[in-house]
Image (cartoon, rainbow, N blue to C red):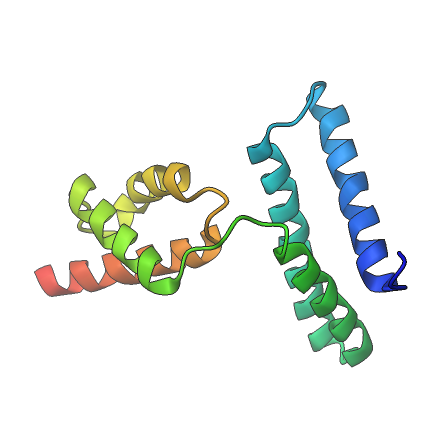
Length: 140
């Protein structure tokens, strides 16, 4: 507030409000994982808004949402790199003996527990889908 960073102040106020609402919905104090989940939900909303504003040709709103997105990402735990995610995906595929795209649920179930809060799960899902498609094509 002292720095007069209005975007950061409004973004953090909105985040605090979302955390407070989640606490009310849950009926008890939130765990760290719950709070990370709220932050991730806010990030997902910003990404969706950016897409919508880009399609609508609203560059001013796109820029605002991108600034808010960057602020929110500062409050997430350190995210895994793409290489680390790919390694964990390959390891989990081997552990679960997954070989077709229909095994995706089995792989994602295990990965979601391990990567919760450490990676964007939609990105992880995309990597899993690509790896399973590749494996199923090689086995044919």
